[in-house]
Length: 219
Ligand code: SIN
Ligand code: FE2
Image 1 (spheres, protein in one colour):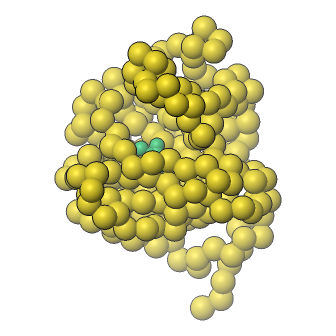
Image 2 (cartoon, rainbow, N blue to C red):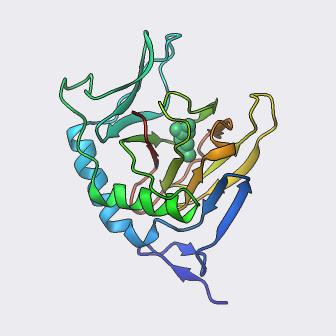
């Protein structure tokens, strides 16, 4: 079968494939590509209002991944701990509103993955540059762990680590490219996950960066 290219000339899979990772987790290859332009435009409006910043962990370490948020609640970390906050500590104002394209994509991807009725109230936007990584962690700061996570990859490719319920469980390595979406919930909701250090490179739309949108129902 012939390969196809996305709007920026990347070779993409001719078929939008679903790749199950385990019970409750699936990679939806290329799911976000159809909305590429609208997503990138909306992303611009978000980061103008709430720029990327490097948060500090409760232990006092500066996170290498740049972060911001959009939606009613934003995930923040500082010396006092991790929390969801309706206010951007940098501006003292509410986080930028969740763009409609973001919300629709998250709800559609969740439904496609078997989690109907997902309505996110938080979108964490992570920005990785070459060399930056995210160590293995669980997403467990949300009120209702019955709600799934929807994670959208844009820009440079990365290797996503998807582990087990214990930190020591060896993770599988999942290459993620521009437009891929990972959804996990149910029995997989508390699986450890992370991102290997980004390799040097360049993406036509986003330069030397990978952006990840993590949608959650936090409150
Ligand atoms: C996260 O776990 O918060 C982000 C995962 C990713 O960047 O793919
Ligand atoms: Fe996470």
